[in-house]
Length: 124
Ligand SMILES: [Cu+2]
Image (cartoon, rainbow, N blue to C red; front, top):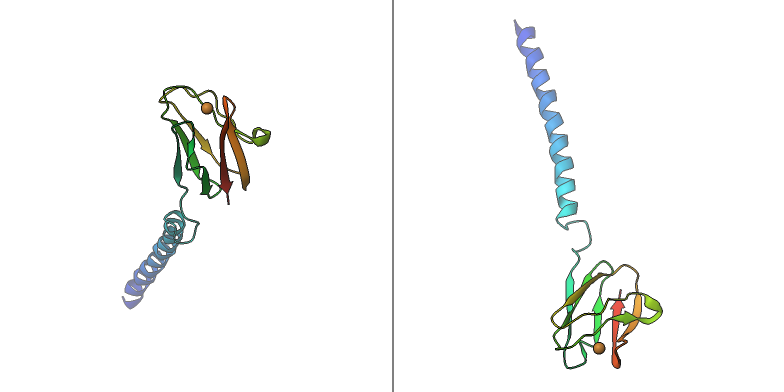
């Protein structure tokens, strides 16, 4: 009789040990996705195009961040980096262009329609 009670108890203990491992694994996965172990989540930055200028003229972001250029002028502009590291289509009034950064570096860019419009995107 005592053996009959002992065996199910041990089986129960083994079954409990297993979920504990699952729980630990789940905690680790959750921890990495919530930023406990991983780098902070990517951000989105905005550069306004207004008064024939890029504002801010210099923007520093982290690789993986996204940059959105918004044309607030009543006429078209574009965003064209040196060596075409990135290059938007022509952006009509009110249009925006989104670019997700990948490579690190200092990128000087202009609007080819108004070459005096110069700005810099620094990706760290
Ligand atoms: Cu322009």
